[in-house]
Image (cartoon, rainbow, N blue to C red; front, side, top):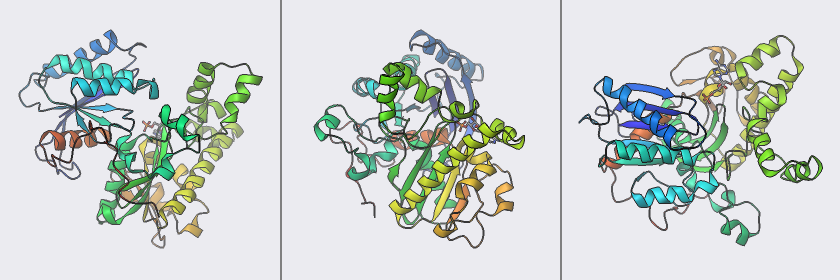
Length: 406
Ligand code: AMP
């Protein structure tokens, strides 16, 4: 399986041998090659084409290129699937047109994904290509959580609702957290905190996502590296009327110049930690705002789930920053959440528990692996593991919530 993550400014790829992989969780997959082509120019097209040809060339040099007979399929990360694509789907012309129709919902992301798919189909026509959507895992969120309290006709006319993102990671991590507890995912309620440069939280009840923090776009929710997360929507009108900023300027401000970067000038948690150690107030305040938001979401999602079995930290910050894990769970003993300082300080690359023995809720660090999850879902689709239930291209593809949130 070749996994391609063709973003707006980079193309990342991994080649995975799934022959010995567990179909349920991908364990046993072997990583044969991986790499990244960075700093691709703005518009999709020629630049993505060139980047992908370079990827193909690098793989060819090792006898693993697009023409090699062992290559069974390509899995593409696609950011926005809207309400139409709620499962991985085999890419046809019609599917590609459907992904293009969603560009207005994800103008920063879907064009790069489309360019990657288009070029990759040209490189070896006939090879199955599968789209795996970042929104898909969140398609089960019940209507009362997915809808904003807006005029219904306007919301429906323009697709304004909460979709959620990072779904591949939330799916993988919630399942791996259950495995770490030695339990069936169907029995485990989890809060997943995906804290990378982008950050999102999800509430997963028995393996089914029932709530997540990102919304129509990845801007909503937690404080992120450069994104504000939640704010009063009237901030936008205020900036337009009083500061005279236009829509694009406000979009850039909230997506690229806010969050940790906007608060203290740094979006890397390592640098913020160093500055805090030197007594830097702006860095300290940025950190406190970041972890305050996290604590609020942990409390809210505890209310959504009713019973929480595990809180799983993942991605760059979640996997590496003991300080964030400690501060995000501080004072939550009332919810049964207690982190063990010694376990929390230990570094490692394997899934592990950092909660105290007395903690009612397990707290875990689970390294995410979105590429493996895309490869696993692609493999499952092309080998027809549960064929018949698939059909992300169908007219009523959004499944009814399989479970009401308690
Ligand atoms: P990701 O988007 O998952 O690659 O996460 C990237 C972010 O992880 C960086 O911007 C850093 O803020 C954070 N990060 C990476 N390594 C560390 C570390 N050792 N300690 C704290 N934060 C880290």
